[in-house]
Length: 572
Image 1: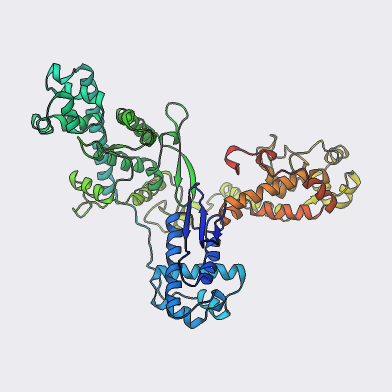
Image 2: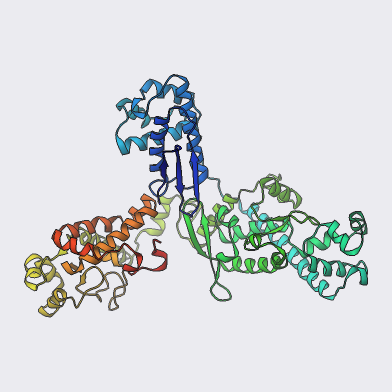
């Protein structure tokens, strides 16, 4: 659902791709007409029409609207965007911060693209070079191999030692008794913590008839609490190591819940997570990440059993400090991670504390994977000492006749595919073989269709969802000799498809599906996935009689169950 403007009071309501919502009020700003025009532009920048897909990002644009209207009102401006003049907007942008200038430029550009109401000189200025260029945000480079090894080794040590201590503590608790009966021993302290949960020292003392000071003076309580329940140090190590093994984005790791884990056997996990910029994603975890996840679930099981319902569903939870009933579930702050690095002596190549960027961990994961799998991605070349041009000459050039023949075959297939897509759709307006033979002789000659096949095409015996298929076993979109596995919309560009009036209803249902996808997908993603098919379906429907389309439209309910979809293709 796209963002919508609220007129009374003036504001904007947004629904983002991950299902979250946000609302921003601008009812107190001066120049309400200008503020509303800027909101019109902002709507075009927000998902699904634009790339803005988070409440924080929309908040920056709202602050820019407040700043611009306040500054211009202070100089006597009272109109809307159409009343702006080049000198006014130039004066504002020259004095504004880079972020304010960038946000207001984008909103004015989007507003003008939609309405065309900006003054020509203002539109030219908005499309031009910024007065305050934003700082170039370059992605962080991967960690060096030595730094990466030190970080991985430290995390692995903290994780394994903590889990071993936890297992020993559980074994000791099974042999223990109440400290009031069996005495103040490590096993008895763990026995009581296993039954009380992560309590504070004063609550533990009340259970054994001692003061808080006496509990700490006798000793052993803090260590027992750290052994029984994962500490913040262990939590940081687990999360960093999980990022090292899986390569999932930091915000996706932060927001994981137990329900996101889909076990497919003993050694395979399909993990669903939310990536802030592109919404829901899923990943089949590498084996090391699966084993680490199993270990973490076992390590946190006791603490999870004492957590409230809201915290229990969160994947990551630990104690902020031993003896304090404060369960940590959110992302560990930078200060906590920096203290963890210092405490465990994780140094960079210069000997100082290693600065942890969790997004840089993801970058390093993919860079190392590129080198190990030789996949040729941009983050890492096949040989780091070679340029991509040299790699192409060394590794992609055809050096033998058989290799050259294989490359030429690939090129020919690609060229044939382009030619097939360029052919106009085969649409017959009459359900008879004569019309098919008259209008598309090239189809009959190319495919060498006999009278039986032509009759089946026209009669409906070879119908698929949106067309009749001349040869489902041709292997054009799958293995030759096997039924075609293509999705319904692929038929729209297939040279084997013949469209007849009886297909109009399903074509309209597919067109409605495209409309629903357009509403929920970013524009660039929609055009990449469905763009060619949405354009072709219009060409096909334009060939039908309007009366046929009018009758077919009455049978379209605009629901997903009208189209054969996979679960991940649903729009509801």
